[in-house]
Length: 74
Image (cartoon, rainbow, N blue to C red; front, side):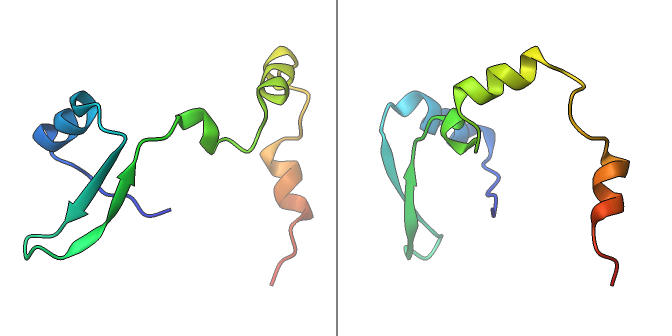
């Protein structure tokens, strides 16, 4: 997912603005798209229940070495 780094002034304006959507333009006035505020939890592929289950059972998964060992080598 591409990232855009905002300076402090713009970031603060977005955080404090209370707007749910902001139209973004470049310096020439060309519309780049719409910024929509989302809940960061919605980015997780795991449900709340699955996150809680995994947090309650740390260390029950496979190690990185085990996972890498199963990957095909080209």
